[in-house]
Image 1 (cartoon, protein in one colour):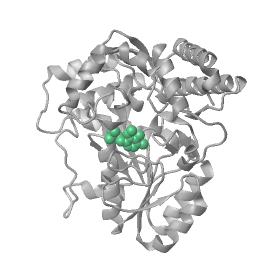
Image 2: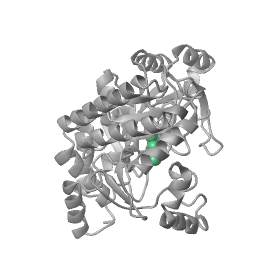
Image 3: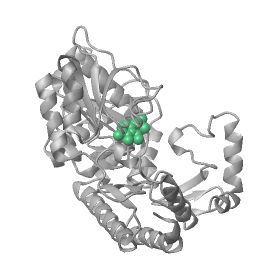
Length: 420
Ligand code: PMP
């Protein structure tokens, strides 16, 4: 399958090889690479992508969730064009940033005050810095398999390029492990940073009792509970926190909130966030040349006010639930020990069956099975992340779901002998 893939993509291979001379790994985002080289994309429209070799793909990856609106949402294109008319980089504040912040606040009332950043990574860095400044403490509880940005990654428990916080790393969905690890440090805990569903870590939902337990623990310790909703914010109008009925002390956002342009936001209780008000003496600094860049502000505002109603989000997530159930029924029917995990429009193909509660549970999976399905789907014009991650977009409609399910059925039929 890999040889066929390579031979059909000489232009992508040339673009990749040329780039490796100046970019380690041929591009500038580690997540995008897979061997032998990823397809070089040249165009997107709706839920479709075209590569430099002329192949068309159904885009089930959705830019790792930032592509919620698809590639050519008319209201967002119009808002960007309108903002362009007024010029870029205006050297001061504009009405659009306040309007976008109000719209975010309306959806996430726990973000009484908030600020924008250029990425989800920065939003999380600022949330942790805020928690440390607010509590005067240094320790941060995170979870194995958690991902909060390239310098806040806990796939194997940590990474040499992580920012040097005093981390405590516990098992996801395991309150007993959390309590045991936190016990010696209760008075030093500044923050609990958690994704309400492990996203990059495999679309493993946080269990309701576990997340409520973290809320209680934060209160008992005097630490701030930070919900990283960079991915899960799309699960309802008010994110997963609204579905759970949990009010975190701080929330971080990113991805689609900027309409498909670079975006991040952090916010929380006024007591914490007021510290960034420069009218107060001793105010904390939060800087960033492009925090309020006019294209992101315009695109984000158009998306939230004109496109992403509660109904549109609910319909998208219902479509995701239905697709996941259909794919899992197909795999079970054929006796293939694989499954799709996730919530709503976010999902992940796993190469093992059975319940999955933490990142450790994924270790037994056979990545060769995922690779095979990935390349076989690509050959049928369906694009997902090499590791099996998928995020449906608004234009990914019923017909797209049918197409995806049919492609998977063909792959399972052709490869059943070698799948687990
Ligand atoms: N948090 C989560 C949960 C994410 O999934 C990501 C990105 N995949 C980030 C933070 C980082 O966001 P960004 O890539 O915009 O820095």
